[in-house]
Image (tube, rainbow, N blue to C red; front, side, top):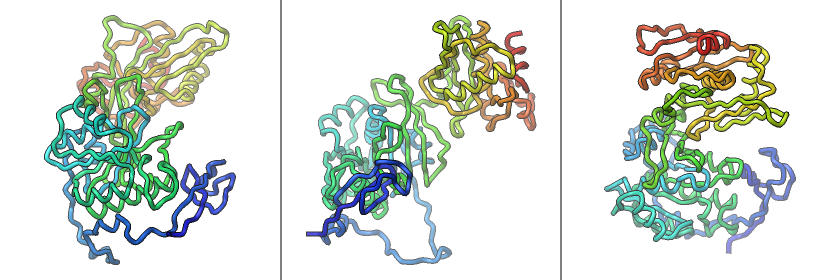
Length: 456
């Protein structure tokens, strides 16, 4: 029997220590060390030895490396393909994380059903084969080349993968898989690290793309050691509120493409449907003009979006004014209210202010500051803003309207959706000519100018 050894691992970063310590010397977190039993030596008949490498590993001069451009797997899901950088790279290891119930398993099962003519192995440690088939029938037609395998033992998984010669492997989820080489329970730091290392070795040596579905912790970070994110090639984060129908797919890490891409899906009874023009859905349609609403031209990565910003300003009924925001940073809202109070003279300190980004998405782009300010002033004065106006500018602490990046994409998105005016910072005027656009460009420098143009 191989020699066993006890060790302590940090649950936050995966740092190993021979004894328990209160504070991790690597990440600085307190009380994160747990004891696990590890196995120092792997048996000689390890299943991973069944996977033979396709190339001889030896030191090579970088000038002598022959570069053969690999053909990516074209995906039927255009949103996922764009976020991955234009397709699926052979031998890539992709970590797919998100909250419970957000639609991680549904999206990848939907992909497995749509990839006709490609052998796909869907490994599940959480559901039975009957449950997976029931969900697959609900979201579309079945794929004859999709194999289901409900197993949690890494050795059994590698044994069957070596014989199937699959084109794509999906593991749902990495926290449920355990290796016999490690004595600790499934989901522990050492188990996740060892199982991911085995799958990474399989992916690289057989040029097979592998999707790993991962859980997240209560603070939103990916469960398991931080080294897990360093080991994989791509880290995808699936975001969204379960009470709303929209889901956002972002790439936090991508060795084969940009991390600025964004995929948007709509959840319905047939699964997750890609949204090719999300601006039309995120802008509310109203039969009559209402105050407290403004449209912002934002950019997620390199993708322009038009979203509706809603604000409600009312008298504080209980003495202490309330500040609440959904989809927008509350601290930034407080900063913008302080600018309106100090620099512009609007008495909002004794009023309740509520802010909402329509559609249930969260926006961190500072370019929506001007739309937030306009919506708040519209609700405070009870005067509606023309629904054909949109805004794209940042607001500084002195009340000035600051420029933002990717201004051409914002203007073109507003023009495409039929808006008549777009309010921009005058510092964005350089290199932009009105004759090139059908939409009217309004350049402003101060909040007072915006107020006069909107409510005079």
